[in-house]
Length: 349
Image 1 (cartoon, rainbow, N blue to C red):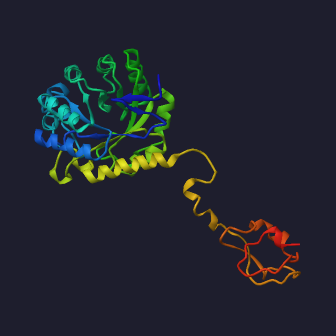
Image 2 (image 1 turned 90 degrees about the vertical axis):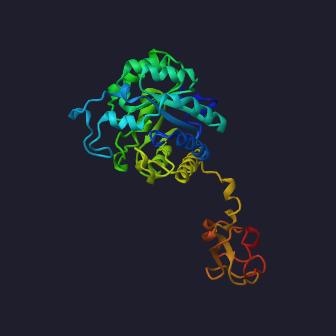
Image 3 (image 1 turned 135 degrees about the vertical axis):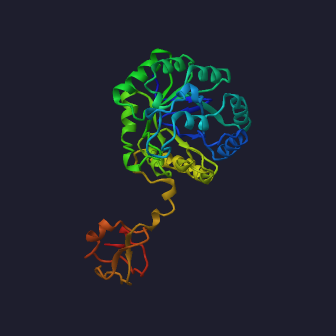
């Protein structure tokens, strides 16, 4: 397996800038025109990819109103699974138009399939990559089916323990997946920042020899940006046109300007990592002259002994280094020295 992968010509890995995915999820509010508008606005953020979700309520669950099919607490309290997924689904018949709009805008689009029929649909649209949602990480037959497409796979690990992640990775690899990303994920909506445990990200990368990243459900952008410093090279964040529109995921999604800020901040975080080094940087060249050095601060006659009243360590930095002060004091001036002269050895006997 390789620690660098490629999606639609974009290299992703430790030595490349973070790959930022704009997750549209269910925030289209059941309106194709809005979904297409979201693609336009997402493309304008500078994200690397846009992701959607491909399922129907009937492929995810069944329409049964029993307690175990009803959500308790949180953002979707009281709703049945079938009711929620009926609202949130991106209809299969929209997919062609959405892929076409993304291509027109020059941005990569791929999806999370939740069953084999969804994989078939996406395969027919030549999806460049596939995502496995955290709740589907246990569905090894689905993972195997996706892996056989031979495309890069991104798998979220929320809720899964280490053994379950290992089984999913093994299944993907045994079925032909050569390019794999694991996203650390807290499957809470929204997720508290204090639960993020971002130090898991480098462990995932090392343990499974994969590109690692973060599927971020926290509020704001700080957690995503911090993850880049710990090695996250794929960042997935939910997107909405307006949180006030009331989409199923809108409360923990970023609006367009916030997403632009996320993309910029994640890239700045990556650039700031650089390399270990102590050499003078190009940006420091112009200010290095303002370091301290030894200067004559009072007129001195030739032959006069230099004292602390004559020489001090001050800015700028054109004189002898401050460490030379003990060797300078007590010596005689070789010639007349003027206040403001940068001290050098030729001035001293």
